[in-house]
Image (spheres, rainbow, N blue to C red):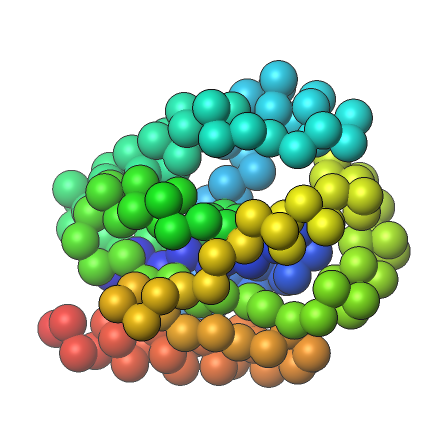
Length: 170
């Protein structure tokens, strides 16, 4: 199984996904590390990415998932995956992709973004992320978790969900 922790910037994707990866001993990647320099520069300058900017990035993420699938490994990925079409590309990497949507009010997430240091994504792009966000469809494997909970609680809940799904697959 492959677990993609999705949501807008500042929702806690990396923190929660990394925690689940550590608890379950599953390889982890942060999609931010896959962005080409041009994408990072664009976002750092307050310019939202276009679908054309995202396509090669999403394909590289799907390939990462596929590499783990070929080895027989599960994986954990922190990735915004805001639109269904983006999630479709990620699902193309392997069967068994499950999305954990970390969701919450813009005010709470905006406050977190304003306190965050050292990240290329400025708080001014949060509105564009919420505008692009398409919630999981009823036919998409996944769960929605409320980011108002403490990170430790989110890690514990997501790890329980992931462990249960992994046990079902065995």
